[in-house]
Length: 57
Image (cartoon, rainbow, N blue to C red; front, side):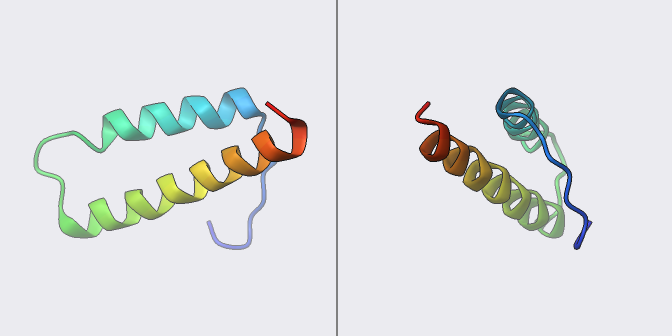
């Protein structure tokens, strides 16, 4: 995924954020999966916050 940039809408990012939060609550998640998914969630949340600031949401 590194090096690939896909432009997503605010609504798409919010959907991904909520879906990822639910997905992370599954049973038998490994520490490696948890760490990777938390990093992805942080990245998505950062993009959402950037969009909020840029477009005054």
